[in-house]
Length: 120
Image (tube, rainbow, N blue to C red; front, side, top):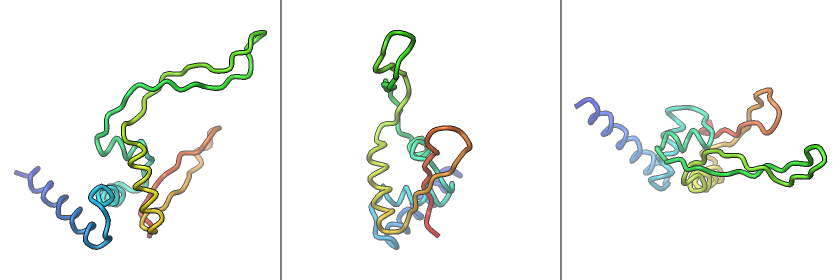
């Protein structure tokens, strides 16, 4: 009973966002997710939406190891299905100035994580 009420409220909120912002169903789900949870990365968004992960082999570029030159080293990792769909819809929302993209330096080497949030 309580779960059904929560789902009905979520459906009503998504429909309200669709009507006020004139966006698609998927985009309204993204907006509602960012409103409820604050800034999220693309992987966190995919996980919250329940997308499946699949095994992915990433090839890291190497310069040399000892005397042998090895151009690439395979590294196993996980990747979410439909990351491109999420990114394309986020980009559409960014163009409409509903969502903004920013990076947060975590003090580590390499690329900082890119986060998305509702523009205030």
